[in-house]
Image 1: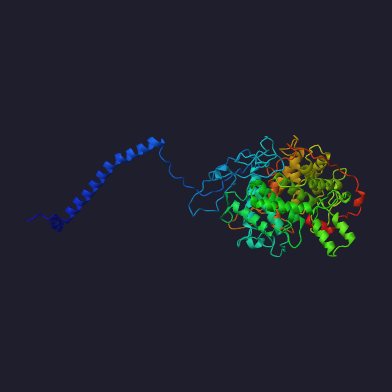
Image 2: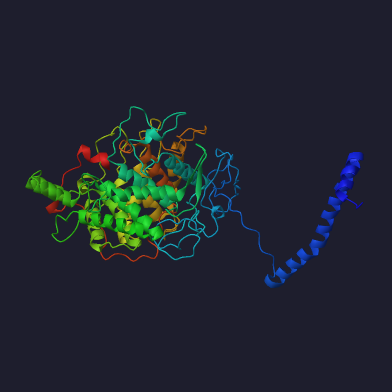
Length: 587
């Protein structure tokens, strides 16, 4: 009978099952060892062949970590220490989906926080800057720089001011509408369910200024060096949410672009020049930072509208003047519809004010540096108007030289009025148009500003964010760390008081899921139209003064016609009206 191995195994298993199992286990184990032993030399040989070709083994695949912000090193006993480097302690992000986004983060601008190949931000400037941060590409924009612009001089950004900017940007992101806009009327709808609201329930706002507020908010992100291409994430640790900065900016710009009218304006049914100047400024900076064709056309159209809206010089039939609430074309249309008689028409056609004019000049200057078309005559007309409203002692009027140094009445006039705000505005227009550091009117203005330094009175009625913003811009240009002037006499006095006032007024509620943190909720005289969106945005821009604009007196040629103060109103302007009470409401 032939040997049957299957039958043999079956009988053995029935007689001695544990012996059979043990034998089978050891057979399998020996087989595994033999396979591993004999295959290893072949694998090693294969590796040696690959090394012989490439000289190094193939690098393991890079696992991308989620982009994250970094933690700025806390300096509890010396919060205002001067920043000398952007090299900070790095918060290492985790891919854990359960990561606690309430954890404190810092500034996302550092290069360590960027994915490979991405660049940092850059800040637009009116002077000649060293180029786009992180790219080495020359440009007319100043890099975001710490301290005294690399000159070793004080008076620059600090740990405290940068932390406040970051918290302000978080507040703005938190209160951006889903369509990309910022709206005073709708801000309460973005407030959290927990804790206090950012506005009182009985406060009433309108949508009339949404275009301007959206542009003002976007300027905060652009001024910090971000644009619609930015890859950095910012974590709102108050609300435990993560946002990509590029999307925040892109959505805001797209909302504005979709609202632009055929004539280049943004407000309907009638253009409002504050809105138009701010929107033109935002698009000019967005285009200048990216060279994106998506923003070039709306930027140029917005600038064209500002140029066409400029009033004619009342004493020179071929010259230009300043701007006010209404555009030149709107006044002509109202006359043609029979809404204005000849006297009213002539009065409105020469009606300009220092505030709107300066905002427009800032937009035109940024546009010119961005490579957009801006006629020189528009700058000269603005300078002629500022020259007209400036008197010999350096004081500047709002509508005419007769009002120089006088208080304006109007909405919220229970607040302290700071006449030096007009001097700051006049200084800035002269600076950006004429680039003449030796202009005597600039120092006269600086002396007036330091006699009325930022201060928070007990009743808060001294608060004036608008004044502090323009005073900071004017003095930083004239006497700051990057100015050709060496003393910094005026800037240092102003800067210390400004930092104290602005930082003290920022909301510091550290409770979780409370939306107020980082905003400026204390109103000033001018915030009744824009609420906390206006006050937060204007203060963030104030704290970006250290790097947002390059110095206009460095590497610039002076314009042909020098500005000078006047001591009396020109004959042809005798009908220019004094500021009425309603004139103050939109300064």
